[in-house]
Amino acid sequence: MKNILLATTCLATITGCTQAKKETAVQLPNIVIIYADDLGYGDVGAYGATRLKTPNLDMLANGGVRFTNGYATSATCTPSRYALLTGQYPWRNVDAKILPGSAPLIIDTAQMTIPKMLKEKGYSTGVVGKWHLGLGTGIVDWNQLVSPGPNEVGFDYAYIMAATQDRTPTVYLENGLVEGLEKDDPLLVDYENNFEGEPTGLENPELCTMKWHHGHNNSIHNGIPRIGFQKGGKSALWVDEDMTDDFLGKAKQYIQENKSKPFFLYYALQQPHVPRTPHQRFVGTSGMGPRGDAIVEADWCVGELIKTLETEGLLENTLIIFSSDNGPVVNDGYYDDAVEKLGGHTPAGPLRGGKYSLFEAGTRVPFMAYWKGKIEPTVSDALVSHIDLLSTLAKLAGSETRVPDSQELLEVLMGKSQQGREELVLEATSRTAMRKGDWVMIPPYKGPAVQTQVNIELGNSKDFQLYNLKEDIGEQNNLAISEPEKLQEMIKTFEKIRGIESQKIQQLELK
Ligand code: NG6
Ligand code: CA
Image (cartoon, rainbow, N blue to C red; front, side):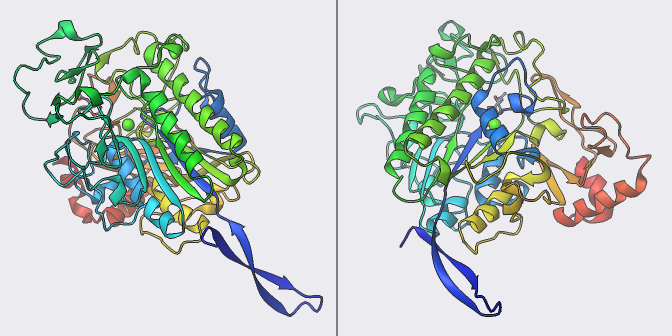
């Protein structure tokens, strides 16, 4: 009985007025969230990509609900993942910023999370892939149990990389322990100072098979210079080109081992974040260099996961949600031909900006929900955010749990309603903006208009910006002056949610 939801069914009798309550056993669905890293709105066939082929993502998008206004909460990874799991806006937590690999866990172990909520309903919960939410409480000894981490915020099983593929430590952790570590070769990690005698990307370019463009010039592993220093732990270091198979293998295994009860799997793909290291069998498959090849590889992973669910007879009882943590970036710090081989492909699709940007491409991402036999193929223009998944999945699992920032939108997720959110605060590198209805308002911000190293427009301007996304999806016509009433309405809503005093907004944002 543990794994069933007791649903109440009302039976009307012939007389029409007598109702009897009957408890019907309904099996709770498995839930899989597949979360790509830096995949853009325009990187998926179903969202308009033509040169890049993503048949498995297209199957999910075209066979389920394909959201056209689906948002990550942030234009970078850590805040987005924080909000996804906790249902809380990342700007409420000052620590929800891009983290070094040595950062402490930023989710409070007392905080509600999707896996915690689902565990309470009898689910097994697992995370496989990129974590990037910090580990431990301060100074981590990588040679001991690293805790708190995913296991302390709701996951029964965790097989993760600590931060990002471009950050040390370049090892996997399984339930808090570095996998494959040998006692006589301890792993040391430092983000301030190098370890004596250890080569770096800066001093030893001859040891690098992948060249750094900006940042990424500390410790070298597998010919790739990273962010952060590390030493030792040689037996535990990952092989970048095998990462896809390593994570996919664990994700499949998790499904196979947990199929007898409802499970929640958070499968956090590392693609197409830098360094892009597709396995040899994907090299050259996109004709667009490693970024395109990594997307083809990620799409293949999605197909393999679907196949596993199908083979295990679970596909009809599994809700699959696919999205990306933030928008696209082409050159994010390595010379990898991504810019040169882009051709006519537009990772952001029709949107302006990209990763790190307050413009739409920073946070508006591919977002789809697929459930064979339960969700009808639908294109939904409803405004939805990853932040809503906690309350929405709670409703699905029969849980009473709700958290304030997270709206319960189960009917929308199931494609039965197009009544999404009314408004949403967007975040990019600690700056915030306001989406409401068809409109977006970006307050004035100091700082460069373009981040030249990554060649992305950040959304900064000394003036307020106001765009009507329905008529101007590419945010070309600033209507802040011609639509003063709309601007005021947007500012008011923004200030209310952000808790900023009206007359202070300009000073505050310009600080
Ligand atoms: C930036 C890195 C970038 C990427 C990003 C995090 C430099 C110059 N740039 O600081 O390469 O790692 O952090 O990306 O170091 S995210 O998707 O995890 O947020
Ligand atoms: Ca990311």
